[in-house]
Length: 442
Image (cartoon, rainbow, N blue to C red; front, side, top):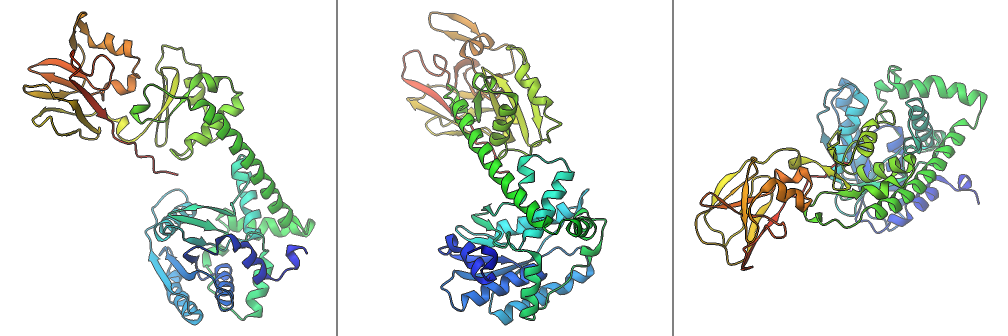
């Protein structure tokens, strides 16, 4: 039987079947038509089905006077349905796009409210999906953007699910009329200066007059593009795994990929795998602003190319590309005595140092490179530290953060580097554990 011939509550229950073991289903409840129908559907199903605990969350942006009455309306609806409601007030940051700023604030509240294993349910429907695809098409989006809104994705400690994504707006309107539901109307929905409102009120009526199934077919195209994106993601992960070879400097804790493996790929596959790898780490530029990658890839082997992105930098060194962010982008400042070498020494913004074996005696201090350092090595005499670091192959970006151990003004050891990190007799060794990068973006 076609899904369109199954009644709406049954279709909703079917789409939610994989999530029946979640501890909580939390509905994003704006008070508008779509979320009102979704909340009512779930509350009615809960009367006859063993469903997870049902809750609602209303995000109050405070952008217009009319919105001040919405939390009270949402509370009355939830009280009538017996559903607990949480009202979260957010501050929308000013910016070029009020729509985007409001969305960011709203989803920030959703992330904070979604606890481990929980499900946040939003009420976007098939018409929203078609509008999203057309909107992004007009902005020149690629396959990922044109796949529009995914059915589900991770959110906070749990997941976000859009269970009405295959349901037409007219079906929601019919359900609301049949059950005599009341909802609020956002005055901004009539403002055609917002692109989505213009598409909804001007473009889609013209499209559907000429092609009555336009919304359904556009939404179907979004599904096809979503499947294509899944295949691109699978290919990217295969390429990433092939390029994620072991490096002797993995102890730095810096994400890296093998450059030779990437150079064997076509330009399109290089961009695909890099987008896949970097997406959790930084915001990426659009397709017209990837010249920075070309500069990194095509640079001479002795060059030090850097591609600066929104949340960090991509460096090329030692036959690899490295992703640097957070503290790695700033030179550390330290020149202190190590008065208790039997204990680990915390390095401000740079991890910590510790000894294995019996620490050397005397007054110890830790510094970073300034230039011109010389180290005395058994059987090799006095050697310039710069040359020793070149011999080690340590990437240039790490050299300024590498802890140097001194005693009475003499460079005694260079942390972690073989032949430089311990005593000639092997009775102690200096270990550096760099600080973790803050990669919590995406």
